[in-house]
Length: 427
Image 1: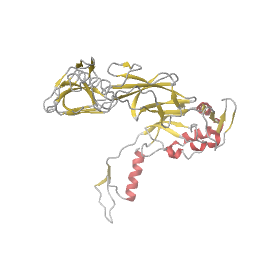
Image 2: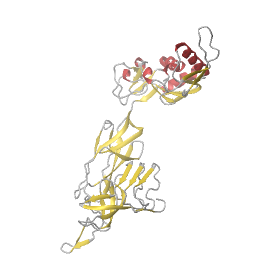
Image 3: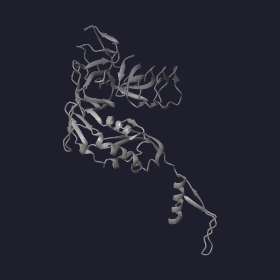
């Protein structure tokens, strides 16, 4: 680095002074030489050296040709190697293909990789390529990120470590192992599905449709059906049970891989374009959980009066202890509203647990009535693992016990009330 800095300073003397270089005690005259020049270089950020490089040889990708797959790298620091430069290396003539993984023949450069077939690169032909890549790694360094290679940097080929001080035989053994890809598989990065929206009073929906770019690699698990869970009770809905407005439901279904397909390490699930929970069953199967609610807010608890003529319980949307909902929260009525005067409700939970932001309004209008939001219930935000920020409206008077407990990502709670509300234990 000192040598590099000295060279840079010499260049400055030759071509002129940069804006971040100052000169002191210099007396320039026609007859007199400069007695002393002190250079001060400010704000020069020293870039790190590359400590690790994993060269990823081209991988078989179903539907692509050998000319359409390229070299890439994984590095420390990130993006320390210019992968665009590596893409200019053409090894499309060195692929071999097999139907059984035993008998290989050379693959044509314009033919496509296929699921279920076996592929490898010949190490005898590529040992020089591998050796040359590491011997000339300086050529590919991204100088915007790194200053050069650390003298003790560690190296791998296709995640297989190699000894930079080892013999050619050791390098050959690594290349031989790393370039045998085995059977060609396709990765599933996204599990995407659509489910019809539940409607108050209607029967349970039974159909799930898999969509998206990975839908041809997955299928609904055999003998798996769409199960609906009533979030209020935690129990599976009965076969003849109908949806009720204002309730929250979780749909569950299982998805399995098709032959020669694998899940990526970061597979995610979305249902109706909303992030959904994934639970791994085994190497081939995931359970997808999708939580939704009925659009029209209404009561979901016991009735508050009886109709003598029918002797059936009726719901009253504006009654004490009635449970209501809007698009964001579920509430319990704590004070009945009238046509002229607002009632009061307490926040009891989130409609969607995967939200990152929650904004509790001062007032809400539910089923035609206006309510002041005056409290946050016990454990109201339980399970909201992704929640980062919460805004609490000015009418909140109390926050229940453990309302925000165990929310590791929650970093900010803003309370708009002029007077600090009563806060429960471990809130």
